Image (cartoon, rainbow, N blue to C red; front, side, top):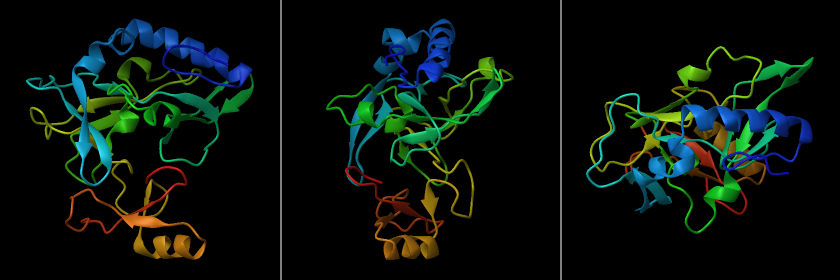
Length: 218
């Protein structure tokens, strides 16, 4: 069932919290609903991944500017997919929620809004944006939250918007990427993976690999 212009949910109980989040975003970040955020960015072709997002010509955001929002379909749990991000858990009414956002339906349209952070590509180091819970929503442990992209010092005029999918983790297989050993295990299980392309044609400095999801990309 629809819950708003940015977020949706098929779970009637979760949809109540989705609508509350939508109302809060409309008050705190109206630029995501009225088109201003999307106008500051542009979809950009990428030789390796096919598509990414970059700053609009002539625009360089001040520090702490809310550039993009990771939004889409909200579910309880962790579905498999290339455009899925987990959100901070919350507990209300005696029930615990472990929400995730699946942005695949939006990102796979021919001309998706550039202000959806799910469209940004990955970089293992020197990321140009960081994704975090907005300060305005921190401490609201009894409410569904969201994740917003903010610029780092590495972002230059016209530059691509890139974030570390693993959140700064430098080892292990609990994030979006895996090490070589795990990639070989996945291949034995019938799951393809590709080398991380965070440095273009050069080898990834962390030697990471990304799982290939059916019907999509990494």
